[in-house]
Image (tube, rainbow, N blue to C red):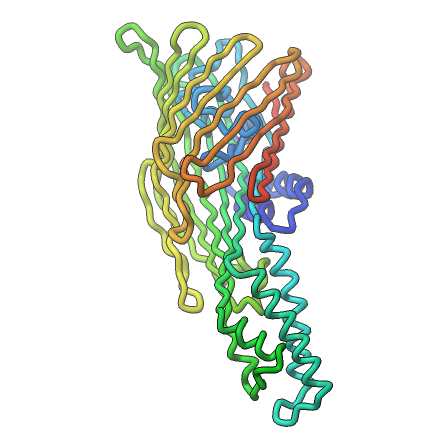
Length: 440
């Protein structure tokens, strides 16, 4: 059920807060379906998510997507399991529920254009079906010319257009202790990519009909070849994170690992642009799934009272997963190790953070790789109010750079936590995150 939540969230006609409501409903169902033992652990859950890697977290995302050295112990299992040892002796089980995140990029307004061309195609079909191509009357031909010109214009607008979306949901249960802190982890991260392949011959033909230089012949309505493709992947991880602090030459160093079962759902949808339905991208007939094993790991150490350094590695086992072949097309989703180094300087009121990816973020082979760097800051204005901001950039310039900001509320002696975050960037990119938590 948690997989359904993620794809509901990055539906391109997203109502974000309705997604929050649906996510809470599906998480409850997910708990009931995962078995009594696992569900019992998840009753005490700490739930979180972060966007810079393969998860979403409202606090970390508001701080530029950082977290390898600055995450709290309650969200450490997602950002860097070694930070589980940051819990203090009087810290309690951390519960965060719900938490969701989404980011969309649509610089070409492709989603709107797909909707627009659907109406234009209907007009074109009516025009060509209502005329006798063997005996064109002037009035019918004029109607067909007008519809052909409109469709040629829409195709020009769609040429080279693409859109991307990501969304995530996660559940963890973090149980702190001074010997072997651990956390149960269940998270899902989805990514979708839409693009068009507009044939110039279609534009030339339609424009020729519109200009009156081409006389359509019977069967010409089937000659148009432009297509649109939608691929999507949903990766679900189920694991247990554990950490321990060692003394190396008298210096404390923490090590954390998260062995996990990894299930991946892949979707591949290709259709003529005249029949493309973005809501069909995740239909089961275009889906296949793969299940395997993977592992996350991390290191952290404190230097003095104010500095923390961290190193995390996610998905340390590489996997190449092929989609179904649809209309002669298939793609390959790449799971590769994502290694990130982080540093944090912190005082009682102020926390600053820096994360830099040492490896590339890979997705489908048809997409360009990215490699991120982020900076963030959190200032605790009051015991119950935190202000956050940051910036995240793709060092390969293939993904949008975003400015981030957010608020944290923690009333009732930090027993309740409400975190809100947002991001905005170039190429018409925006993101939103929300998270509610409790400490027991």
